[in-house]
Image (cartoon, rainbow, N blue to C red):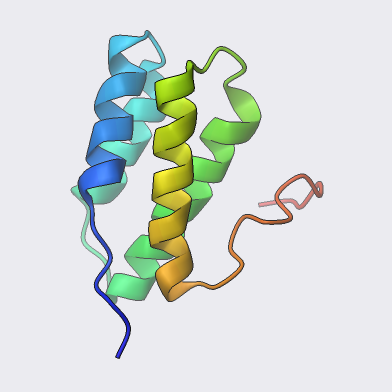
Length: 93
């Protein structure tokens, strides 16, 4: 049995993004965290997609936010091994 995924890094990243003016991305994470999902794996996948989008689209991240992104992706990879490792490929959504 794998260890449980913690939502703490996602909440911390959302708050940090909103504090630094990246309200769209912070709000998206909050919406996902507050949403209703069929499975926890679906929730984790959605969170992972949002975090990868932050990593790709937000060029002004500070070192603490970059560390939170790494923590978030570590959590996602508990349920989805390898998730986000190849996020530089131009996949369409």
